[in-house]
Length: 590
Image (cartoon, rainbow, N blue to C red; front, side):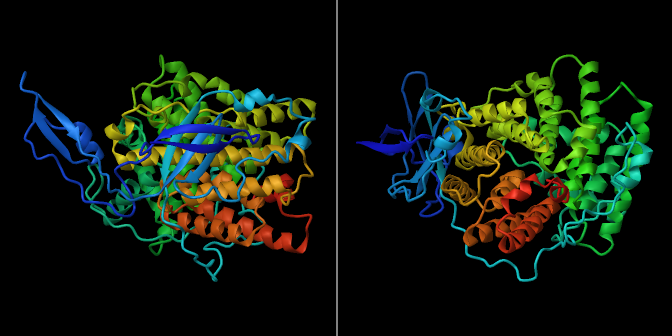
């Protein structure tokens, strides 16, 4: 039986896509799931069935003694899929057996406004093959009210944490900058973490065992959002550096303390103390080895960047750490031949943290760091390095996942925002970036990817595509605003795009670690949100993820958005226009 599904492209072109009945059924579901049955034969081992949790029946072929598997379809699986049709980057979706709804996935209403500025042919929108992905519906988010107690952390007015903004040193982690870096003062209430102690090389002090447990059991998982090849995971890259230099142990302690910074009495003070000790030692070690960077040095610099997300910091402090990281990466590339797995992970981690902080970094970014137009071209060969043959291509992107291109566009869009008002050259760049968002394509998955990886892993990889689509549409919101500064959030095209982003967010699992990398998109979408239910969902999601992953920067975003929304109710000229207020944006660091 052949079913025909309708896909709406970016300009309203309907495409009829033939599909074989049952094509999107997979052996996993949230409801009606049957208990999996393992193969009852002694040999050979059925790799496909065990990985995908299917019942397997064996029969001998009678010739060479080998066996062949007959995979039993779970025909009684009951589930509802969300089917993504990605046509040149346009992610249309619908529930199987359900109407499309009233939300237009892409609107043509903005085209008359953008046509004088953009010279994008219709062929650019609709040419190319159609790729198909299936996403399982997550459990709908319950309608929890926003906590009446307000944010876990209150930013007084819009004043940033106390610090010394006048940093003149050329070396971002020199001793003159230690006082500035140690001044971030935003904390987050967290939950206790328990776990086994006794890590090799850790002292017998209970304090150190707790901190090491916190690092391995809490900190590392929270900074490992993507499902990737295990050899490319942050754990596989950062943990081996533990034996490279004794300073790594102290950094692990500092990160573990940051993760638990407001859980145990006195932990906040301990976290700050260990942080400052690490900064001083690291600055001294780096000064002694100028031009001779090693992997463990880059690991330390990145861990200090990531540590700030748990404590909370200012854009200037983040820029200082990232500048040090970039310097070390450049030195490491000069001293080594080719591209290593470690270098790929280091570069992706740096690029992501750099990309999302540009929008609020303002002068701090231009003071310490080059533009993303320069940086991404500089490391393009590393981003394109694929050391392993994975069934899903973005399994080799340990930080970006499927969102490598969309995060790059987000970084460049944020940089253009920092240059506002745009000159003619920057306006042309903005138009080109907007055009690129409509041409993004995702490489196809291997036909047997779900069998080889298993249903849960396969689902996580599909969620990575959803995250990329959320970032892509958020980029379009920002670029439209840059190209047409007086475009209001009440414009029908903006409202429909915002509604689409929220629908995609609701399709993500509530406990997905991918929420951690959506801070940039949630801020952009939040500034465009005018419906109460959208705002309520976003604030609920920010606080939920901040609590689950101990990410203080998400609390900063939530508090910032609530203040903007309150001000917007008093003045219709506020709200989305705050995106152009560099002073206000500098109070948060994503």
